Length: 482
Image (cartoon, rainbow, N blue to C red; front, top):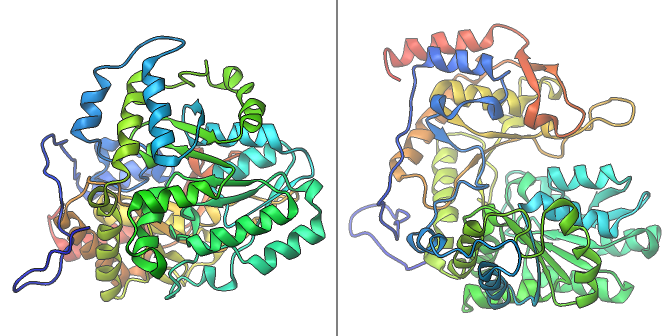
């Protein structure tokens, strides 16, 4: 990103775009926010956007699209088979990701379904830097499992380690030797580790993983959904790559992987996804599943208009001014919130700003779902919708016992080119107030708990009348303010 210094002011992240289409936001009174929480079962996924001021639930499908993407959608070739829109997407994948063969899917989790159904079998274990919720669900559904092989300090929420998403090579080799290659369908690396604070991995680490994969004859699969931001942090933090372009860094990472898959809802600010490879035999193994679950091989369950937007968005991933916008805003939000005493995950990662809910709500037991409780409280005091990334997002074991999460976080996603600096400052203000009044936050318990991906559809209720007490304190301090 261009280095722009201010004459007499603090350094601020400077937007390298202008806003031409706007969408009205709704900041409803806190009394309505409490009713909305009750209606949603105290699960932020259940909130209506009519009751949400700043929607920081996710960056999936919520990034701002560019004028060129919107224009490209108007020239879509709406054919069931042989669409030229797919040809353009395929060319973009080859130009940007360096992969010749492409299978289109309707989003990232569809790619996970194809990969797991193709390569995993009951009893298999997939090693990775860290899981994503839907990848784990797909893996468990076929009778396989995952193992996370990070360095010990990866779960330290306050850290100076620039690459907490790195795989621990010694642990990886030990796991392979003890498990046996016949039970390992592939090694998976996620750029960047979503559930532990959006933390990236380094190219040096991926090279080491590639060498291990080659030694044992294993496939290396890359989840590239946040590849652009991971590449940006490589450029910022890995000395060897500081002078390289994002395009160089992206192709180096994808070139190290046998298979690359992505959610276009993240990678290219559109809606869809893809699986790509340079190995024809791998492409053939996977393609038979596409018509069964996704549609024909030249649309994969996507609108051809979205396919056109993906193609343009992939090229825009090479634009540092675009890719850097979200990480620089996240850094601004994290550093300013931390300066007010709010416990944040550091160093700042990608995707969003992550609050250490375990420390923020250290008066709550893990069984009271601190991150989910904090998510409800943040919405209540500010109309800000975040996403729980802790025990609620975990699963139970075969005996119905909660499996503790490695970290207990509340994520405030910062989609590309969506929010303003004044909105970042508003978030910091509300977080500071809530932190000063954090002892008012109580726990939650399940009312309805689905078997799979419970954090999407589940319903909860407070264990006491704490939301009402928090609302009363808000009115005491803010008067008639929204």
